[in-house]
Image 1 (tube, one colour):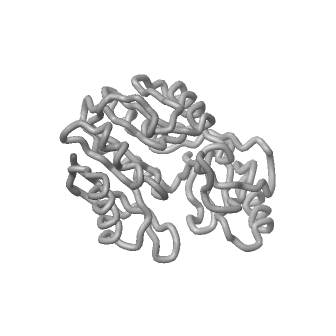
Image 2: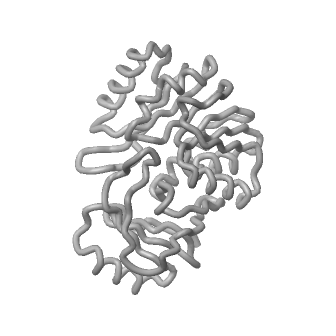
Length: 256
């Protein structure tokens, strides 16, 4: 049995039927009452956290408060035939992005060299490797706790040819890649120059952003490309998830 999102606007559940953590959204009223009801209703949920703010700091983690249950909030989340070990207090992870991870995995071609920027515990990398065992993946993440979990997830899923690097992507010394994934919607477009630097001619770049419409998202990406003198063109777009009132997470697909 895989963990499911119970109510995406109120809380999500990360983990499995044996041990899971519920994470209540920032701004939800009467969170302690909700936490009590969650633990009473779902016996596999051993801890309840609430986000107390937006993602902040260099490591881009939601500040969280433990409302109920065990202080140990490390869990193994299962989705689409693979497992992700993670502690939501130390590493950003969302179960709501499972479908998007599969979309990207389905776009990958055999034998590609792939760079994942801002990779966290590397759920995108694991999803891709489970579909394409012959690709080479380099994941770069600045949060050392996230990189530690990414290495654990390599072993947990028995995969190889996935390199997890703890670094600021702007200071990383890397080769060129066929595909670059940028799953950090808050600020990814400001790193498009770094992505372009690591892109082969003909490479695909997937950049995520928050915006109100496809047109606004595409315009912001195009303006940033112009600013950085990036020679590429848009080849696709996808509305990933709702983020807030009138705001969505979009993916813009670029071809170098």
